[in-house]
Image (tube, rainbow, N blue to C red; front, top):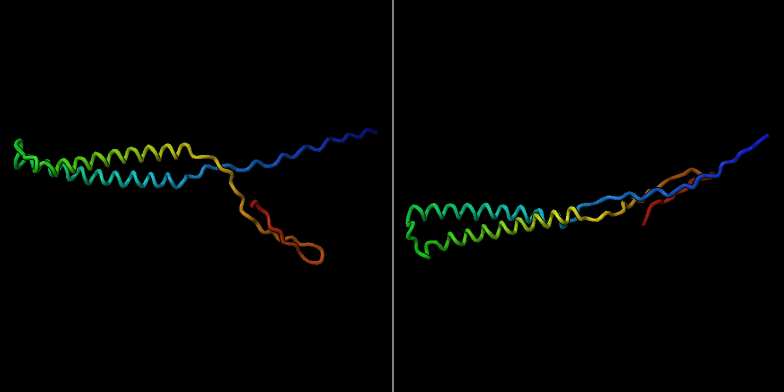
Length: 126
């Protein structure tokens, strides 16, 4: 008679689940981008309207005072465009470089019947 016993296999702990949540700063950068694009559209529209008005009334001999509004609107559009590009770039960098974090298991309550009653246990990571 021959008996053979296998060694018990080591049970490796279950690897913690990893996830990459989107940080709040990415949402803020995205919202900033959208607001800056809206501002660009408003200032750009005002600049085009002012340019059209100046072409009809005084072009090519418009005074410095008459073109001030056009230059202000064009400056606002330029600044808005720069802000939109910077915020979009920052949001992209923050999104793609966000860290991996361990998923935290939620606490669980279990009820187990036992001789003469029952048992409650609370399981989870804290």
